[in-house]
Amino acid sequence: MPPPITNLFLPAAGEQPGETFHTLLQAARVRIEQIVSRGQASPPGFWYDQDDPEWVALLCGQAILAFDDGDQPLQAGDALLIPAHCRHRVASCSDDAVWLAVHFRDAAE
Image 1 (cartoon, rainbow, N blue to C red):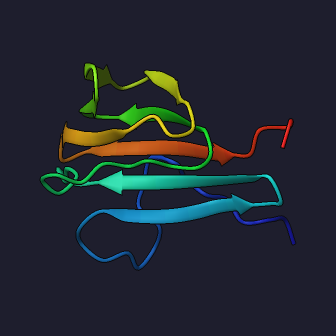
Image 2: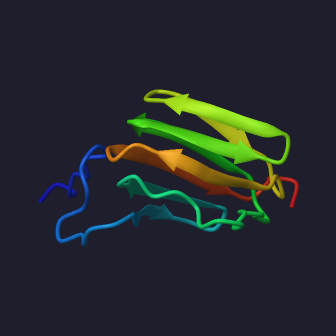
C-alpha cells in the first residue's frame, strides 16, 4: 500500500473551525507543519520569539507579518526566513490563508 497523500492546500480531514496546525514531518532537527488560518491574527500584544529559525511560505491567501522594525505584507507564493529570536506576529491574514512552516535547528548547534 502506498503512503498517504497530504494536500497542502486543504485542511486535514476532521479539523475543527479556527486556525489549525498540522505537523507533516517531525525529525531530530526539523518540524514541517501546515497552518490553515481562517482570518486569525496573533492576539494583541503577543509576539513569537522562537529559539529556532523558521522558514515560512504562504501557499494561499494574503497576510501581514509584523516585526519590531515594520510590517511585511505577503501574498500567495511568498516565502521568508525568520531568524531565531526575531520577534514577529501575524498582524492579519485572509480567510483562505494556508502556510507551510519549516522549523529547524541550525547545523552548528
